[in-house]
Image (cartoon, rainbow, N blue to C red; front, side):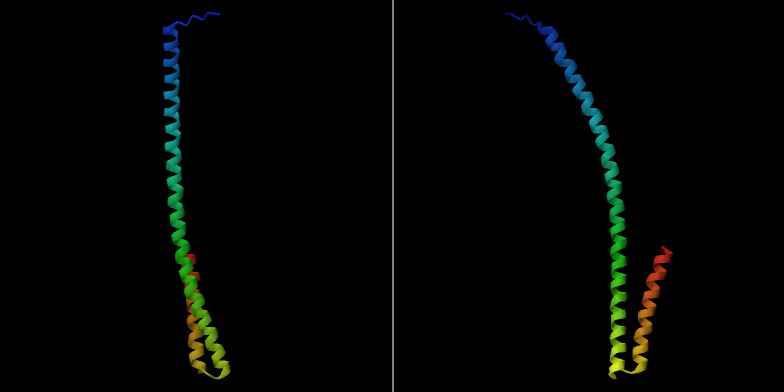
Length: 108
């Protein structure tokens, strides 16, 4: 069986396929650009949220340390190792630090 292929028709078919491929690549790049812009926005939001969480964690860690110190002071007072005034001062410091954390949270 002999098949005759017209070289001009084959060349035209390859050119049409190449044009379709180029158009497809252009559309793909356009969609990728939009996706990358959205991804950058999400990463910026994530960075902001991570910074806020880190700040809050430091504040809470400091407050927990002060509360633990005041509870330890109260325990020492009960054992008779510390004066009542010293224990109350530590307790008041812990309460003030907790109040500051709550008020900062409400301000934002």
